[in-house]
Image (cartoon, rainbow, N blue to C red; front, side):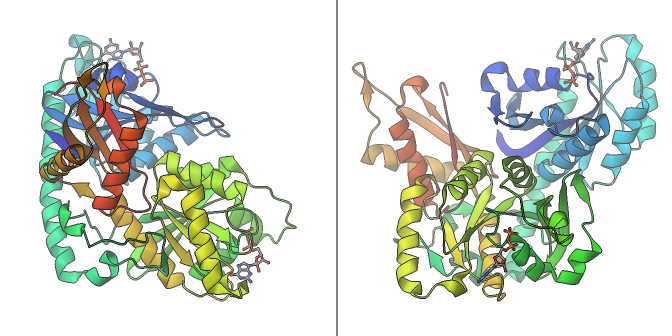
Length: 480
Ligand code: GDP
Ligand code: GDP
């Protein structure tokens, strides 16, 4: 059973998080993503217990390049877990018992309304019993005894994760019903933007995808990135209003980044910014350069990233580098063409921009472009609609049966090549996770499947299931 559930392991160093991660994901399946320039090693992979698969995140690897204090790391871990996970496994060392650090973690976690389970690791043998009893006091229910090293206690983990799967499925049905009742489908299904680079718009394919998980109360984290002078501060000021901004950045997520909470049509939007806003509000002379580390941090905390381009100098090298970063981080992206008020021949410019975007960012085919002016406050509503539409796409879940019918048609139309006389077979395909949409295809000889054919599949998914503006991941595996 492949599910759409994300499980995060949180806890102080040395309790055994990585040991559990490796046991559930297995070295072979671990997707390790090293991003140069930051001391970060994102460990996220397809976890498996018996027939149950889920996305597993080991939060231990998230570290702030600038602030390595335990406190900062704890905060980040919990924030990441809170943002990304459906189920949080809060691990402590049952042999050592609860430490003040564990208690502190518990306090941070308590604020999150998430499905949290306390896991007492190293619970083989009797030495763990006092620690497990103590952990009842944390108030997260009965602790699960586990030995990550010896593989004991996995049945209990199976139970809590599969319960979460059932719960989430039920919520999804409920949310879909509520969305149908309340939500303005007109807004989400049509391209809600001025320009859509996707020339051959095609029919509306949204019927092919399962209903999204829609929770109007959820925060949406949006980062606005772009070169210095693209107009980021002007836009953010427009959005939230000067006064609100001067009151000051509220919740700090790292020492250098802030979130500006703001409400738009009943949803809370956190505008994520690193350093930038604060620096600006002090009316400093502008001597900043594009800080890739700052942008990266904003991108990592956001679900949707707006890449703000200056219409008079669009698609510069730095813009492309940022687009690339967003793609690699797997975030949903909207491209906003700012300072549109300065453009005289808007039609000609638009054509030029479409062409450039197709050519320079082929990996993001069909990404929405929104023309706007932050200074005049024009088309901010269009930008917001595009943000919500792209978030929907990023969260799309395509049903396995549909996907396999589609795969069959794709391989019929254009079969995979033969390798040393034997035809490659693609046997089965499933969507492993959302945010961004990620697929696993099982092939008779995974290593031999050419990159070009993988691109054919990815481009096909994007087009046929109507997923512009989001990265799409494809993992090729053997077996099945
Ligand atoms: P992390 O820092 O939380 O990721 O912890 P690690 O996974 O690196 O584990 C820290 C130490 O605890 C290592 O020496 C592991 O071998 C050990 N360890 C992990 N799980 C268990 C367990 O179930 N029992 C015992 N006795 N030791 C364990
Ligand atoms: P940031 O460095 O990306 O935060 O850019 P700023 O918001 O500081 O803007 C840089 C300059 O561009 C300022 O002089 C703004 O007044 C100007 N600017 C920002 N948005 C627009 C716009 O939509 N139209 C025009 N004409 N100028 C803009």
